[in-house]
Length: 303
Ligand SMILES: [Zn+2]
Image (cartoon, rainbow, N blue to C red; front, side, top):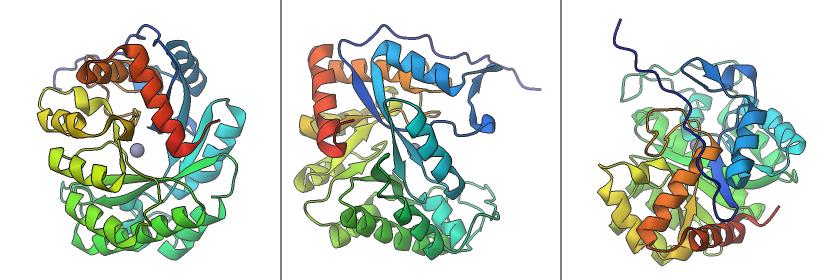
């Protein structure tokens, strides 16, 4: 047995100067998804209460696997401040299309009963987009880290379909782009209408890519990794982005910011990221919160 380093839940940070919105997270929709740290579970109600206490009063929870769609909509109806983004995740798109090759990093994905044909899965997204709880399509995009070649065509097909759905329903689109910057941008340039609201969720590009986002008026949403020491590239991208195109998220339960990297994540932990961004901008925490909320509401509206 290896050495077990206990990974506790991050300490709750001091409340933020003003409320902010976590524009991309994954709230647990069933018992098995409730995250735990060092054996301690944090149920949904406690996550939401902690978030409220630090000033993360609203959040967008992404359901990107078919079985999570309806439970996530119910969750949002039952909890103030929660809204939903819906999509077929790019790695799921490959499975819906029947491609279950081992991923480049060696995992063997499994096709399950709910992996109906891709066009049916896409219809299941679109059918729900008029639900008043839905404020975005997402996350869709390309993931070349997890999906090998044959599945990538299915990801592209699914990505195109999501861009079109978002346009038809006048909803912003949250993009998952992992190791696929060039192709993601190429596909957006080809398909996206100029008035569409586009958000690169958990933005992972460099300054050059940030310039491309700026040229197109696309948004970059930053998560915990902007605080990691190795990510100078990300901080350079942050520095060149027009501040009005910057959003903040947790992508919880992953990607916990410093000083709690490696521990599980939840929306209340986002206060650390917000403070980190305020410092990078060289502005007050209050101004950073104002700016982030204004940007987030410009993209998704208010609730
Ligand atoms: Zn996500």
